[in-house]
Length: 447
Image (cartoon, helix red, strand yellow):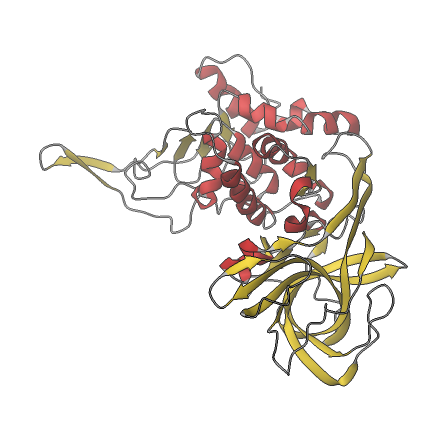
């Protein structure tokens, strides 16, 4: 015991005092210098945390030497008005001592927080408790509703994870799907010591959600929902660093897991209109497959193939702010295969906007290609999805909206994703023309 780091020693003492015989400590139970053992055990993290009796979180410790003992100043409780309770405590901490703690910023910890049945945070100011039934703190202010528990920023995602174990509260696929979108937004902003762990540190959550969604994971996306999932964007908060880091060159550009930075991941539809939920997928998935060097989600990707078919046009993008660019269209003549000739820069038609994955390397103005993924149409009285071709008898069309992937060529038929955006067209206006109208559907291999 004396040779162990303080945090490990304290955790063992707590385990013994609870009358439990066994404890799992990742760095001790997983052979760190054995890649095969690390892959196999990391793939089981969902099972480990879901079935643990209790998870101890050394929330305030910056490393294994920090320990679990932290000074606690209790609140004062008094009764009034016939038995009602009130709590008083001088608050010395203006920050959230769980979310803003050293541990709360680590990417690996997210799945431990969401998957654990019961969790005790040994925070800087006091102990916090969370489980499927209650959230509480030593000063009772969390249970009294006067203070938020660290991790409460996870909101509905946390509820989905804890309620999934109850048949009465089991979430629907739609609720699970919404939770997934919230979780990836949180995860991308957390820190990793090794950028190459980006997929592995998320493996437990992926495995858990696979059961709820009854779907096949595909490098941060889902097979049955690929056109929708491909339309993710990197969104930055004001004042943050806007240079994402490539995590691993083996991770394909069409996956949000390929990037790491201060930006949050969200879906393009959330930044456009509620009507985007009514969009119809026009992107055809020809082939999708992935090969791992070992255990899925915890080993290296050997190959990730995604071949799709849709209409493709080229446009010009101009920087607007941060990683947002305007999309403009000049005069064009479609080539065979649907890709257009370079446009006449003397004429430009405003189309829409896009969010670029990488700002560096993009000049203020440059040529890119737009691949049609989803589409919806606004009529004068309603909004609904539309098929590939509009019917001539539909006269009350308001706006035709396209959701697109922004691509750059890597070689013949091979393309790299560099962003996502939307294009809005108002049929009938002399100043606007539909850039996709004369474009043919082409087969594209995304890398």
